[in-house]
Length: 532
Image 1 (cartoon, helix red, strand yellow):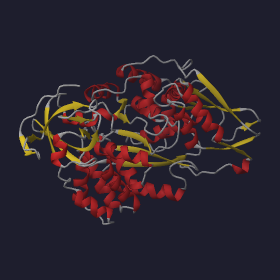
Image 2: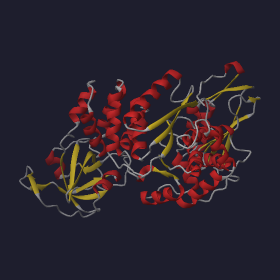
Image 3: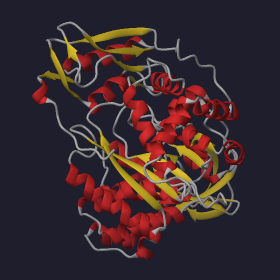
Image 4: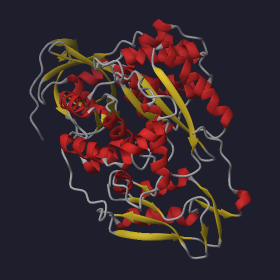
């Protein structure tokens, strides 16, 4: 057993007349609690008994003028946390920023100041600007437990917030972190609301518009429930976790970047909320608008093209729903002085062939290199989105953007710009002709003949994740058939790659239950109305 230093600063006598202290020795507990501060205390600790702590109660930890709030977990194993010690999870330890073994004090925490506003929202009341500012501040400072965060998200998800409340929430989320200023009149970005596997258009749009001369500093998130995010796929080609100063240098020189946004401290309250939203599959329009627009405004964007895909297994499944979401985005963007162009696109199936970081990087590089094997749908969608951004340039006539984007891509200028960005961020070895895919492979075959009339985005994403994506870069799904293709019995629909036998088996079991493909006749094909 370890010897724990004795603590000072007496605070309360125990029943036997001995003086107790609220001071404990800090211990780093290597547990990732994902955006939640968690403290660990031994059940037999005198401070635990004297203070009347209980599991899941909120405690305040102080040291050298710094303090954090944390949710208390009680342990019985002294090898985790001994008497006289206070353990902190990785998130809490990083936020307190004290060395292992430092003396800290712990006490019952006062409820966050915004708790009254939270209770009013739970009761269905409309909140004002100051209420949202207080709630978001406490969220960003990790003053809320996961239980309290869940209560807030359910309260704002249960009843539709009015559009001014969504504006107040977005405004408060922008103010919760850093706001970048590129000292440029035109800073462009492109974003998709998500839900479509393989949709790596950002990795094509950025080099195209940057080659046109527009400033496009793209900071993206990593995947949480999808098989790959832009940052995961770009990481196959280059470093993405770079300090902001380095990114600024790259953007100034090359007019663009493709990096992970976790180091930029943009809308930190959003990152905390996402940690609860994703496991609960909560994705209300209000939270979606606040999340996306707060990140873009904090990143310094002045003009944004927003992609809303529609399809039977997309996040948005009808044109009326898409139009309602568009109007909410446009209202909040207008109040925050962000020029917004919303584009409604085809979300009936994955975009491109690859689903998973290496497979998606392969598709992107084939498009940039004008390889005949490049997926046409990925190329065309990226060109149209890039064209819409290029038309933000006051020197470009409306309607000319697509042709300009196509010329930049066909001439090789987009590839040259992408290679320059990759080199500046720190190149990783990658050959799209021989990508390093998971060595374990199986194919999913058609059980009957027919026309591909449906591809379930959610099912394909699940199969790819069970195969190991995005953590295993070479894992995922390689689509061999798309909507409208004719297949015979026994034809391969897609190929699954994995690195581990257990992953391969899980993916196989899921695909055996339902391949994700529907076969039928031409008249069974779902129709979708898009705006390109």
